[in-house]
Image 1 (cartoon, helix red, strand yellow):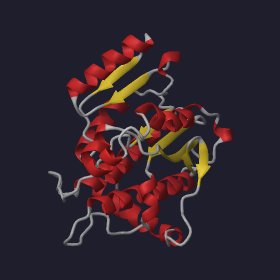
Image 2 (cartoon, helix red, strand yellow):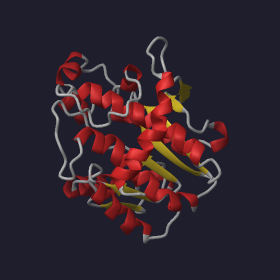
Image 3 (spheres, one colour):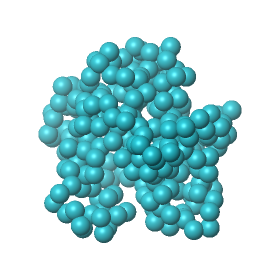
Image 4 (cartoon, helix red, strand yellow):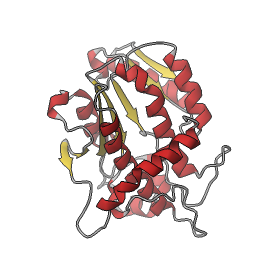
Length: 264
């Protein structure tokens, strides 16, 4: 799997909405001329069972996966929403689905060793939040922006831990911040912010640039477990924010995620 679609790479698009996925597929075929782009539907990343079903179907192809881009799908909900499986929606989408998919796809990533890599799309919003074991925001007053920042901090810590756990498997793990891009998701989740910065935010292409760069760079030029912004390694913590030491909680968080995902 690679983002360099026009070069003839084989790409599998994992989509939740069949109609939108088909429209995107047709557009990609038309622009690139690459017919080795396929649509995989339906996979709702917020559903553990949905992710497991997709992973089982896809694994039957027995193809090597060179690049897995995780959590390109994300959500910031202002109010608490509980999924049919009983999880807070933001956590289920941004953390639990990401974790489950990555763990289940690891055997196919190993087939592409030593060039395989996992790229997790995080956010600069994580700078405001330390890591917390309160994964589903148990407080009475739910704050969607705070929960989103917490989710994105977990992604950074997970990437570090994956890099440590799987260092001998030939799979690289990287997280990145796309910058604030003018997307439908930003407009829906942060309408006031989107309106205030209308015309000043990045395009979708600019937001995706570092993802593409990470997918195509020789691994020896990258730092496994690192966080990237604008094609360069970026700090994971800012001074005086008190986030650095909080990463020690990642082991207990992974235990919870394994239990939620039924990966015992």
